[in-house]
Image 1 (cartoon, rainbow, N blue to C red):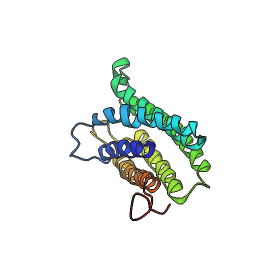
Image 2 (image 1 turned 180 degrees about the horizontal axis):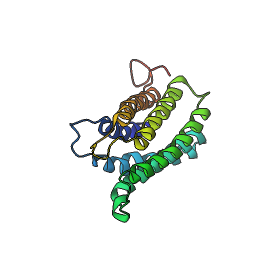
Image 3 (image 1 turned 45 degrees about the horizontal axis):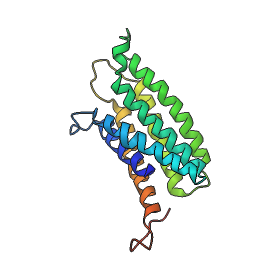
Image 4 (image 1 turned 30 degrees about the vertical axis):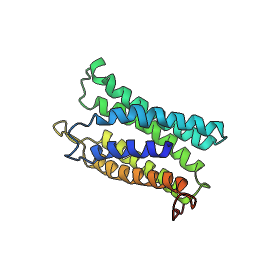
Length: 186
C-alpha cells in the first residue's frame, strides 16, 4: 500500500514537473498528496512499525509527512502570508526544504544498501530526482519563465522513473505464485 501510494503521488506530480501540457490543473496533486500520498503512507508506516519493520516505517511515515507538507503548502498558499521582494523567494524556500529531504533520502539509501536491487534502485532514483528539483528551484533563469525550467523538467522525468520503480517494488511484493502465474525479481 505504501509503495503504491508513493508511486501514484510521485507520478502525477512528476507529470506536472516534466511540463506536461495535459495537466492544466497542477493542484490536482494536492488531493493525492493529502490522502493517498500522505495519510495512506503514514498508515502503511504505522503498520510496518507494528510488524517490526523500522526501515519501512521510517520511509513511509517520513515520505507520508512530506506529502502532507506539500499539500499544506498549497492549501495555505505560502505567498498569501508573505509577499517577498525577490520573485524567487518561494522557489528558494521550497529548494531549502528539498535539501532536507535529499539528506534524509541519502541516509535512507545508505540504509537500503543491503535490502535488494529494486529497493536500492528506487532510492537512487529518488536521490537523483531531488537533486534535479533542488537545482531547478535555485537556478530558475528568468522570472518571466512560466512553468518548470529544464532542471525541474529533468527532475519530473526522473520522478516518473521513481514512480515506475516504486510500482515495480510494490507489485514484486504483491505478486506470488499463489495469486499469479509469474513473479517479479527484486
